[in-house]
Image (cartoon, rainbow, N blue to C red; front, side):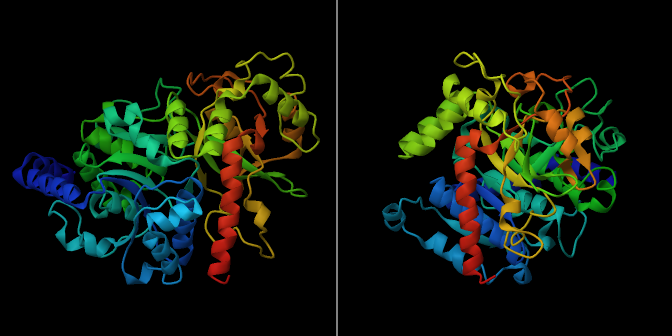
Length: 481
């Protein structure tokens, strides 16, 4: 509490104002005020980052600058560095000849960009930074960008993320968060009152509230410089704070509360979907691979326009098709798979007689990020051909509807999410719940089991994912693994 009070005094003083002015000058001189930030250390995380950057440049044709932040020479992957150097050195003409985008790729040592010795006196002195606090320190002090899309090394964009910086909610409030499956899992509610001064936990009387999935975060560092100071205060005391919440992900909301900015904390109004793969012969046949996050409602048209301007005819078509395909085509696809013995799908007849625009899955938020969170396929090279884990284990086959809190709790198994055979069979008989429409965020519907769709029905996402599997194999071959 003493450090919290000291920080509050610092934020009112001239030293903090000088710090912000210096940061503004730095952003102006560098010219790259927007970009993607990935914190990585070691070969596997660097390889994950390389896969994401290759996807951005080659297949999503995004020229957004990317910065990989590591901590010290020991975390710098010399095996992956040549791949990153190639991505950074590609000229626009060379990239254009191959149909790719080009853009800068920076590799930054956080300990040189923002030495720990220069931390203000009110912050806890540290000799090293690891794990979750490394992300927060990079966002708060080390990155070169003012407006940041912070992505975990195991998160991969499914569209050009440049559009996210133009989302009205972000432009108005300076931040954008995506949701976790849960509304209060692994959180001691008293911490919100003790440190944030909140009279009640954030989920009380708010059925649409979710904790944060910090695999991807959009943040304006100057707009919320005070929030970042409180954020680092929390994460630098991780040995106590993490006993009350799971890692860094839920310290963001608490930092907004401590800074008196809770009204500016904004989440995308769409629940997360579960990505599954089929593992025949396992007692829980359908295994969790990760989380599929959505584009904020109302910005699809801008995404299509951006894709069209970039010459991405196929991307434009697929993006548009993800939300506005004709009912006839969708009904045919649904009818084709609904009766399949291999599918966790809609009931037969649910698409029968559908009118244009009436099919629920035509109006769900467009997938924007896939965050690999399965312990079996989280990091490169887990998704490689090995005796225990095959390539296909990492390939998404099904995507659930947005998960209510009840559904998330129902499907939790020792292996994270895994659906057994009984759930699979029952799932073919379920109806279509209203929370497929992300715009409405209707809750209270807890139909079980959980409906899911074949990934192919998400045309754009399926195409990007298929390309990513090839990029994974390419990086594997480059690293001779």
